[in-house]
Image (cartoon, rainbow over all chains, first blue to last red):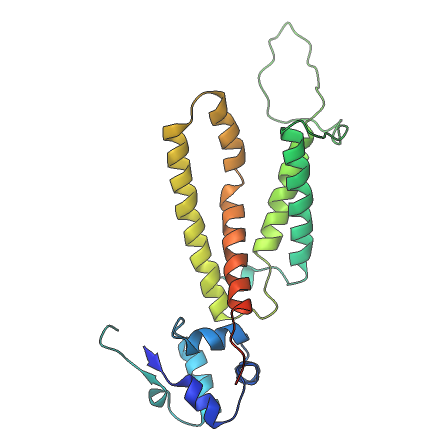
Length: 66
Length: 156
């Protein structure tokens, strides 16, 4: 699964640490998601959608291999 | 992952202290490098080898290694099963992966031990193998969590 979390975070001028605090996770988790090493749960994805103010489909995208 | 069954984060350092102290004393004892005086002199063993009917029952002082083993198990569990400072679903994923990894590595090493080791050495290997799953999990989990924390790029 591809994502544009880094871009969305940059639009809001948030650091990884600030975004992590807003959704209640560690900075490692944000970094792992941005690097594509970790696919978050539905709950976490919806929390991100709330922070970014847009639906999850706009920053998460399925790949052919998914 | 079963995060509800984890201990509070403050137990983590207690666990590490117990692991380091008991493992050090245990290895020193097993290698005859340094041995404390008997720490469990009066503790009876409920299950032991049968004593012939015509011989008196003698209570031999219990080895300190029994105490070290119990402390190592308790310490290992506390260190491995305490919450991280920021326990979240990614950490839970690492925990689950580490559990599986430790099981695979342990079973591989155990199978190798059955093939390669025999005689009295096999007993020695089994002694260490009793603690291997817990310690393998602990080492792998801590390594991955610490590496993911230290490997973070500079924030932008």
